[in-house]
Image: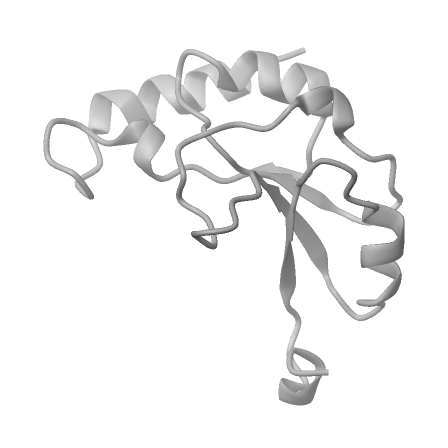
Length: 117
């Protein structure tokens, strides 16, 4: 209801907790343009830097975006395992200063994604 009230396209975040029923969750958001599947954490709403078990990736005809602990060393495997519509990255491409992205890590991340067949 909250998201729908704006009358704009939106992406709904789904925390991939153990036993999470994505189909039931998605049914509650028929107007969502896509879903961002992220690691579930009771204490934080994202940005944990931890990945979830990609074998739990749901099948859906809706666009699914992958988030959670992605970095240049694991993003190719993550994309190959899940075939997401898009990927989300933040801390996985940061350098020595928290919050500041490292251009070389971003470039490597993008190259790893582009290299997935």
